[in-house]
View 1 (cartoon, rainbow, N blue to C red):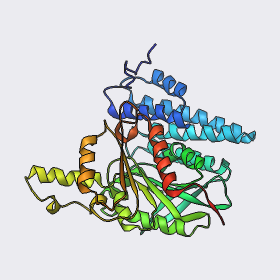
View 2: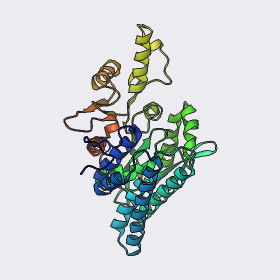
View 3: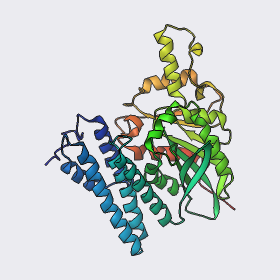
View 4: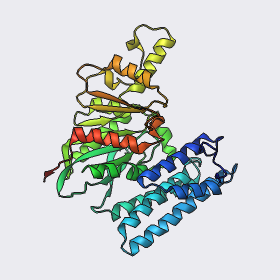
Length: 371
């Protein structure tokens, strides 16, 4: 029998696009250990259509159950089960917070619980991860989770992962850490919030220099003794702006980057040029110089789904017309036939991340040298 809120095409609550997208994210998270399909379907059956509070209530309840299992497993010395349950609890707390207004205290309580589960997960790993603070703006520091490579006595290639403004870093612990670990990488998961509440997104969106965070992150990594600093890459998770692409232009210490390559900047420039019948698109103002229209030594991978916001043919056209011959820019389009074709590869992030980390491994290498 189909769950009450699920339609025949597995869309949850068709009248609520945000809820349906979040439910899809939770289902795909099961592939990497951030959820279980059975638990997700159980919650779908319990949700009450038209009752917004039921979403928060049911996911919070499920998060608490997983958190309790994690603590019980940890007390008995079962580290693997403890870690798995903390990851699921963390993700379910994030789901509980998602539909609530920014000023709703229940949202902040859920975020704090999510962060505590992340810390417990990091402490139970071997080698253990750590919460790090990185100075950025006056009165505001970045906060990240550093997850070391499996071999703790070597300098390891390292991948920075940072989301768009408004995206919190906890999701990366189940979404990307397994891919990094399997290739011998360390991973630094970051967001732009620091210790701020969700209302801080408004201040972030007003800033035009978000790319300035990346050199601060590189300064931090350069001071660590367990980093092979010649092999540091970055992943911009999600599609919404080009601030990581702009950072690549300013940061020569990056060895590889996965980002939008400035496609949105270029797309906006072309749109305004066509809107006003301009023959020279270079006179159209954009916030910053797009990566593909400038010189950059860092190899760049751009991935997108053919069913995403920016159509594949348009992306190919922009890349071909903007890329310099000396630039190392690669575009990978995921088709509906292979999945991963939705916006931000939401329908199959595992497939996209396998491709991304294989590309990073080919640029950064996995063999580490002794300290």
